[in-house]
Amino acid sequence: MYAFDYQRAGDAQGAVKAIAADADAKFLAGGQSLLAAMKLRLAQPSTLVDVTRIPELKTISVDGKVVKIGAAVCHADVAANAPIQNALPGLAQLAAHIGDRQVRALGTLGGSLANDDPAADYPAAVLGLGATVVTDRRRIAADDFFLGMYETALEPDELIVAVEFPVPERSAYEKFRNPASHFALTGVFVAQFASGVRVAVTGAAPSVFRATALETALTASFTAQAARAVTIGADGLNGDLHASPEYRAHLIPVLAARAVTKALG
Ligand SMILES: Cc1cc2nc3c(=O)[nH]c(=O)nc-3n(C[C@H](O)[C@H](O)[C@H](O)COP(=O)(O)OP(=O)(O)OC[C@H]3O[C@@H](n4cnc5c(N)ncnc54)[C@H](O)[C@@H]3O)c2cc1C
Image (cartoon, rainbow, N blue to C red):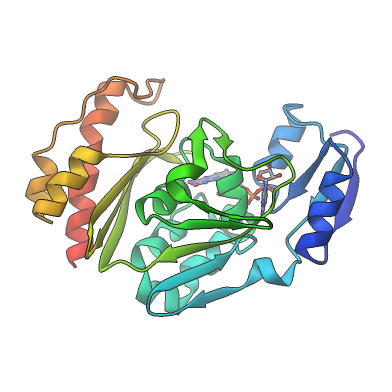
């Protein structure tokens, strides 16, 4: 590690002001990605602006239609929150299976979304539910937020304050996890709304994406059989030492079918 300054922000405006004042400064949440990147010299910020003590970023609110989660809420708190478990069981289950206990105690919703790792779990929920990312200056629809590998619509000095998840009729998440890190080799989030079904896939491509063939099939028939009958092409999917593009393509309808079964209870 090398020398850097540390500032603890008390509110969102203060955090953004500190970042805007220094082109090499970065927001710090739980440090679960950023500190590892700094140790590897992949990131060398001059100042870290800690956003984990900003009250606005730590709140959770749940009503019949929307679950709103502050950006600095850690995964363990989402997993253990009873109102979220009732309103959005798919999201609570997703959070409960991120990484290990230490990662879930420190890693945050906002950090995960800003980092936008192609194998991260939360992007599947955000896109699958058609959530809205609320920042210090605007509201960004999920469909416009994820731009590519580790690339989002955020400006360099833009702070995620919260995420608003609409409550669907049913939802569930299934992932085939990397046994070492627990990141998604492939993960599928399925959400059934009165207006239709949304399906988002993470881990399989350079960035999270919507599986429109599955959405069409499941809007017509919300059954595991309908999901299993869909074929996904391997073009553009990731291939690495863990799995080929063809294997990931095969996993997508399999995991979608499991998610539908889980969502149907
Ligand atoms: C061993 C290990 C296993 C893991 N397994 C999984 C897994 O199975 N599934 C999974 O999804 N993830 C996994 N993760 C990632 C983890 O869940 C964290 O969410 C992720 O690393 C982000 O960490 P963080 O919240 O601490 O953010 P940080 O590391 O502090 O920050 C990450 C990036 O986000 C920016 N940032 C942070 N907060 C904000 C904000 N509010 N607004 C704008 N930018 C912000 C920072 O500047 C930085 O660029 C794993 C991580 C580790 C170390």
